[in-house]
Image (cartoon, rainbow, N blue to C red):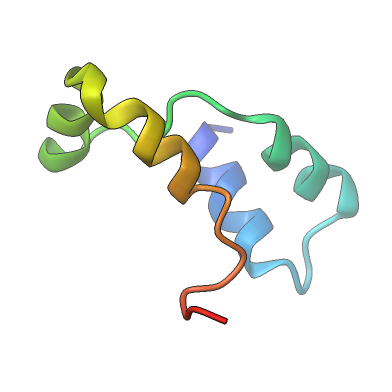
Length: 64
């Protein structure tokens, strides 16, 4: 199972085992899911790594 699959499954959460959600929380790299051109270009540029890592910590798509 790939990192992207684990992350998507954990994000849904409804029918996802708690162990998979816990595993997804530990996956810190790659910061983005590989395979899309924009993601590959962003990950190739070191200046984006800190911002992308911070963005992954968001708990909601809307500001509080």
